[in-house]
Length: 269
Image (cartoon, rainbow, N blue to C red; front, side, top):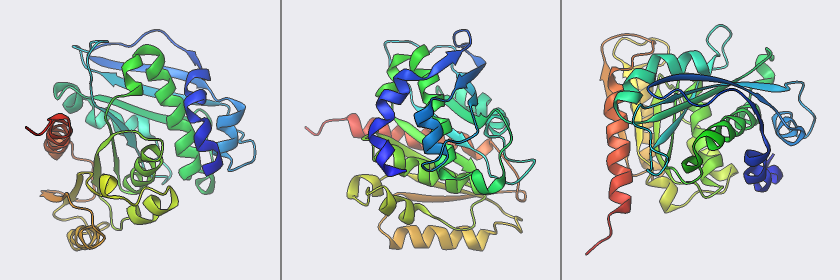
C-alpha cells in the first residue's frame, strides 16, 4: 500500500465527482467514482470491487475560499450496522459547524465484508472524499487536518492520521472516543512518522463513565501507554453514559485542537 502514497496528490486531482456545490451551514452529499489507482489501494494491490465512494461533507456557513478552516475526517467502526462513517458524522456535525470546522466522511457505495473494511480501504475512500472537498474548496490542500472516530473508528483514525502525516499534511488533533487500545505507535512506525512533530499531536480520549465495552480503565491505560511512548499532548475526558456516541465533549476537543493549530502559527519573538 505504501508504494501508492506518492501517487495520492495526483489521485486527488483526478477523482470524478458527481454532485452540486457545497451546502454552507449544512450537509452535502456526493458520489465519487474510484479511479483504478484508488481501487488498487483499497484492494491492497488488487483491484477492489468498490467502484464508488459516498461522501458527506459538513461545511460552516461562513466558509470563505480565501481563509483557512480546519478539517476533520470522521471514521466509524467496521462492526455491521455501525459501520457508516457518514451516519457517525451526523452525530457531530452541528457542534463542528458551530465551532467553525469542516467534517468529512466516506463509505463504500456497496457493502464490503468486514475483512475487507481495513486501513487500505479507509485510506482510499477518504482520499476520494478529500478530492471532493478540494474541487469545492481548494484551501483543503493546505488546511490543518484532524481525525476522529468512535470505537473501532478511533483506531482507523490513528492510522489515517499517520498516513496523511506521511504525505506532509499538518495534523492538529486526534479525537478518540470509546477506544480500548491504541494502534497509534504501530501506525506511526508503518508510515515512518515516528518523530517529534507527530508525537506533539493533541490526542483527546473520550470515555463513558459506565462504558463496559471500552472501559474507563482501558482508556486510562491507553493514556498511560501513549505518554510512555512519547506522545506529549494526551487528554482523557469522561462523561456520564456507556459505550455510546456523545458529541458534548467533542466541542472541547475541537477547541483544544484549534488552540494547538493557532500556537503552531505564532512565531516566537
